[in-house]
Image 1 (cartoon, rainbow, N blue to C red):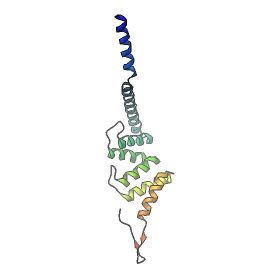
Image 2: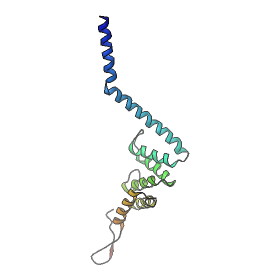
Image 3: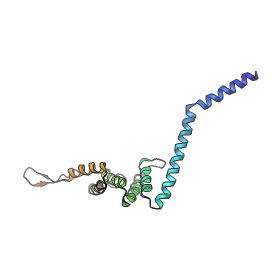
Image 4: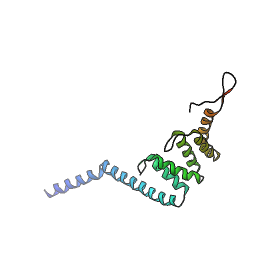
Length: 152
């Protein structure tokens, strides 16, 4: 009887450790801890003016990674990083103005920030800038006079 109980205990312990949901829970907890740690360090570095940390905080708030999603705070962090010459942040500020995320949609400001990011060599900013300039470029009407596209 003792051997049977010992065998049953052994089999049960194997099944508990082999349960994929147990490891999933541990991995999820580990990821949450890593995100919390990343957020904590990013906050500290951002307080010292680190542009990469400011940008990372913007991404975390934009996506809701480790924090409650907040597009206004995301924009603020992107803007702070962009003012410190972070080219990816410049692109995200342009995107925010272009799509009205965290700020009022303003095509001219989107164009301005995409232009700054494009000057830094950001390929997506170049594409967005070309797209905006196509919309804003004056077009000639049927009578030969300039007619602006105001669909924006």
